[in-house]
Length: 223
Image (tube, rainbow, N blue to C red):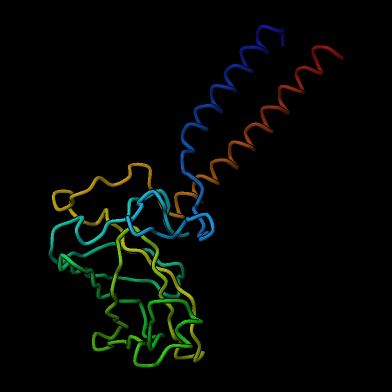
């Protein structure tokens, strides 16, 4: 392979890699850090401080940010053992409340906090399951959409509290009901995992292309 053809192959490889790189646009997941202010809010409700490990770079949506009413909303859960199959959210204008249904009857109670907080709380503060539908249903207060909410769950089988985190997605609310503009760059942990796989594929492509180029360079100059 002459030098001109080698340069052509190199340019083509760079362009191909660049095309892949431009598709990897997911930001890193924001981890809670109270010392840095991430995951907390000031009295003025600074919406630039994003929260959680389920979602990132998304605008929190509060009761006053969309029309009153009842909506079926999409949710995220940090555990496959606490899969939410249905969520009905009601906005009273001053507060949000949701009825969530999970895919089993494995949990007797949930608690709006961590497992440690639930274990220390009075049982009257635990939210019991309604199993009349054949599945576990719970009614929970929601601070905001697009915001991670700690939701400890009490396992019947293990007689133990487990930490779970859930989030209600504002993209489920019809656009004409919203009073705010959602972040165009927001995403979920799944987006980050997809981006990570793309990076791995790019790295493998660079290694393969580098090996091929190295082979031809050695043949051209050393044989």
